[in-house]
Amino acid sequence: MVKTKKFVVAKHFEGEPKENDLQLVEEELPSLKDGEILCEAVWLSVDPYMRVFAPTLPKGSIMIGTQVAKIIESRNKGFPVGKYVVGHLGWQTISVHNPQQPTTSPMAPTYLLPDFGELPLSLALGALGMPGNTAYFGFLEICQPKAGEVVVVSGAAGAVGSLVGQIARIKGCKVIGFAGSDDKVRWLKDDLHFDAAYNYKKTDVDTALKEAAPNGVDCYFDNVGGVMSSTILSHMKPKGRISVCGSISSYNADAKQLAVAPVVQPYLVFKELKMEGFVVHRWLDRWMEGIHQMKDWVKDQQLVYRETITEGFENMPKAFIGLFRGENIGKAVVKA
Ligand code: NAP
Image (tube, rainbow, N blue to C red):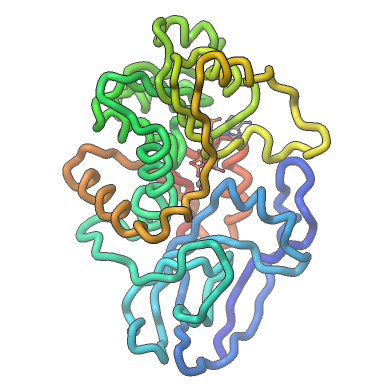
């Protein structure tokens, strides 16, 4: 009998997630049926969306999440032993899984890891995976940026934001980023070549934009929501485009007592702005296009990636909580 370790929901999160909201349990796995594979987690992802969806999981359910896993036993010819898969297998060390079983999940179905050459496999959870595609499609398709335009990114030093800013630079835009520490700001300016970057915890966003974008902002990629985003919207140029990717500033808040942010409708109306939210799985039919383009940019060194690696499956809750404390630079991943 093969045993797996997994994290299950012990208590629904209230405010910032706590380590003992999740419980580590051991379980014996059944033997494989036709079509199934046994895979061992190599890299696991922690992402902000888990905070949003966890309250919908019944207590005792495995925590949701994607991992890169090695196939160690297989009864599926399309998924042979030794290959790696990228799959929504949850927070567990070993899984029995049928990659071809139809599912109602909106997440990308399990796929064999494409050939990354010399690049680390963990990138399948970051620049060459869901966050990469979020940046690629969510920015390019919704903002439709043109060379010379001014682009603002919040959550700029995170998994998605750091890629959006660089894609904007590749497209010839002027890029301004907001992130939560001086170290992050230095990285954005020195290594990612953002035209301007500010620590929003120390610098007034309104003042920063008057300095960095005196003629206004064409495109805003919003990762955080809240007051910061309302302020950025007040700096948009007429006919500006806003891609609403997330609102992490509110994820730990009680939905009935959300922070009040300045009303944005007057900017939308009088500047005729276009603001559109999206879920990256809208582009599932173009998933590999995004991954291959991002890979080419990484290989050409047009795109720099960074990972914050937490060692040890047992430390998944710590890595997850770190997202809400700004502890990660680039993509937060856990090495099993
Ligand atoms: P991430 O940015 O790598 O990690 C989270 C970061 O958010 C932290 O490092 C922290 O950076 C920042 N943060 C935490 N609390 C904050 C607060 N109260 N106010 C402002 N910033 C805060 O995460 P990610 O994976 O790239 O995700 C970024 C956003 O995209 C999230 O909102 C996520 O839900 C969203 N997302 C959406 C889609 C989609 O399909 N729509 C897909 C992927 C991700 P600082 O130090 O800068 O505060």
